[in-house]
Image (cartoon, rainbow, N blue to C red; front, top):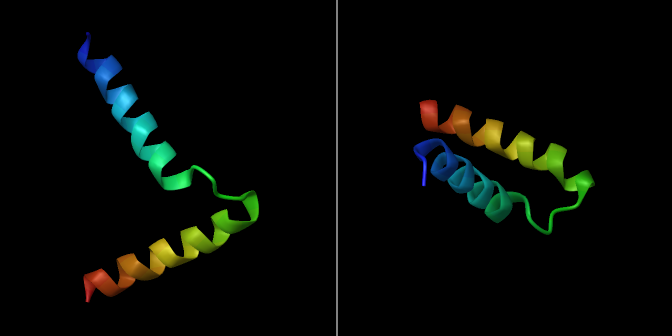
Length: 43
């Protein structure tokens, strides 16, 4: 298998693990939490 195909598969599995089963209305809150986490990690 070609390396770029493996990267695509990895991205798909990571995306699916993170967002599978999530409602569209939950996405903005997730983005908010992730940005808050990033700010806290920088401290």
